[in-house]
Length: 131
Length: 111
Image (cartoon, rainbow over all chains, first blue to last red; front, side):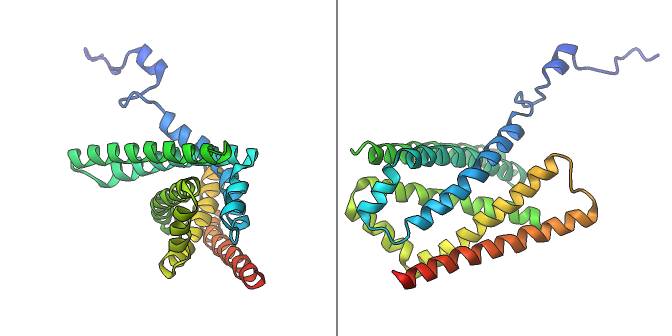
């Protein structure tokens, strides 16, 4: 018998299952949940865009202002930017090996995504509420 | 495998395309003139080329994403199935892109 333990992780650490990054499988799982949502929302968005093809300004606004369209558009914008950040994060972590560049890019995509999401959601609300 | 790097490349392209969606919504909320700038860009030759690219990227990422979700469930890992489903992603996404643009062109001719 060796005097050293074979296992350095405490049972509590294993039970929590969060790993060295402290996030466990949440990144992987949320990417799948948003992916499933985006299968439906993405197909729906394509049909909406095709319906808006030759719409003039007033018709386009009227389409976006319809309650279900407004709700699904907001759902799409939030889910898609979320999914995009998770995906871009993996790409950056895989290919950018200088730590400060990696950290800067990871922050930049989050800031841009949050700002664009808020702006997009506010835009849909303004149209839907007739502001 | 080719499909994996394509999934990443189309994902990056679609992230940029999402900003275009946000721009479109902001322009629509911002008034007729701003929306005019947006539709002028989208309808320009550069805009059309970008839209064709983005539409294929969307359909490919969608098809291959569904393929990945099925693989996450533990299915489709036999080499024959794996290669066949890779080709399905590519071919179905191309067909969907052609169908969407055929619809756009026929509608354009009718309007």
